[in-house]
Image (cartoon, rainbow, N blue to C red; front, top):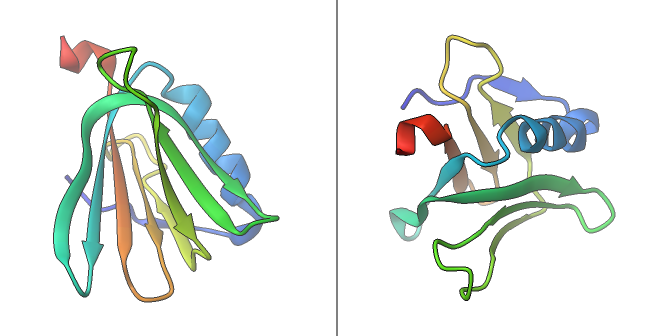
Length: 118
């Protein structure tokens, strides 16, 4: 997976994440964390994408995924006080975005279209 490469202005975070939500409804996503203290780990692997948004009031990026079993709760991954949102916005890159935390921890969200999952 190529890392996202377009830094999004903070004023556009909500719009870009809401746009990704609209464009990728029904896709699956993987959420990967890379933290200085714990290293690299997967938080969700190819789970149904629910939404991504930025809440400026609470200064948090929220990425939500559904579960394969409707009885399981929705997982919400929250990035508090993000410093950057970086997105792959051109058609030559796989759909993805990255959120950077103040301590350098990164959350990478990669989209997998439905037809790829079949």
